[in-house]
Image (cartoon, rainbow, N blue to C red):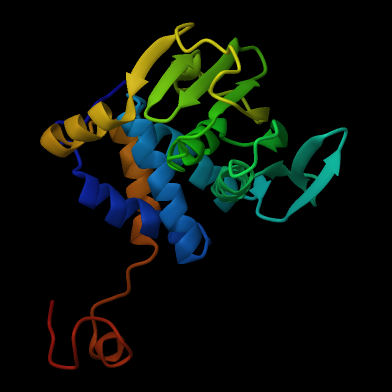
Length: 247
């Protein structure tokens, strides 16, 4: 990984990543969830730029789409594309996070399946960003020619298995399974690398977040799509602070 020499602060990530999503064609609100997901990947020790760049590029180039359908079948909530394309993680992440947050208020176990997600790591980050404390959540997937990836989340503590491989060896879309269950379900939190979201956030605040330079450049290219040229016309139609502003 070619790491940048200057890490980004959390405020910089919030500013650039949200607008990068807008540059890829999403509404601003979707961009905010995408940014929260990316930041939580950083808290878990995963390079957010590599996952973000992959998801943004897939949506922009038409390899994935935002048109999703939900159905309840065999006690599993299915999320799938309405078109013969992969599901964009920028849209699947908010759907998964919202449904999990709602279902966590009930005591029953729930299962979700998101079919053919272009970048499962963004979904995992969105789930981690929900802050659900009264349930245990398992997010898992297996990509083609890859080993299984799994995150077991219990409030602030996450147990990670094979997720770094998903960053280093992306290989097409994957079906993501999510399990929402009780804290006493017996699912182990010690089967993989254990990380604390609170500690990860503290490190990011103190030291910033290092990223792969090429992936960061890709994210910034999407951000640049939201900029407007500096001119009198751009200022009088809303850019800057007023017609006399020259920044």
